[in-house]
Length: 139
Image (tube, rainbow, N blue to C red; front, side, top):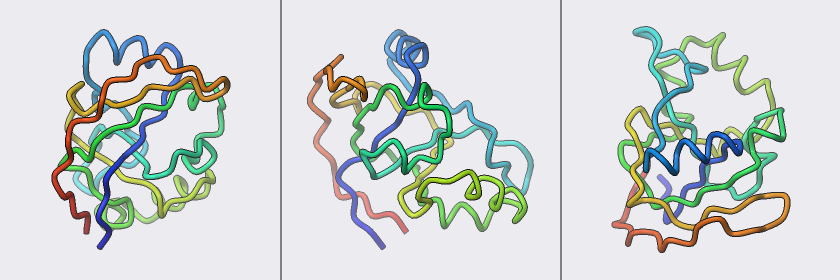
């Protein structure tokens, strides 16, 4: 088990605009179908490095949002037990570092947002302090 103090979510410029307006990150990705059928997810990572995400299009990692741990995020390797094996192979085959991945099927609200950074320039777009994290143990 790993104890986390910070997650990161990467998105494109337009994605950040929508997230900022909604004051939440909504589950939208259907990349990792659940064994019971499609289940929209939010992809999170414990790495600040865009290359670790597995996203091939650099535009999709243009913005990095730091987040306090937000239950019910699950460690990717735990989630893979709920996903058809061919789907797991396809996702992990895209690249990145799966050991840094987490998924959430619940929205992540703005009270979990910390620093929002434009990755290419380091420009800070928002510098809200991250809400104090309770110990979040991921299994």
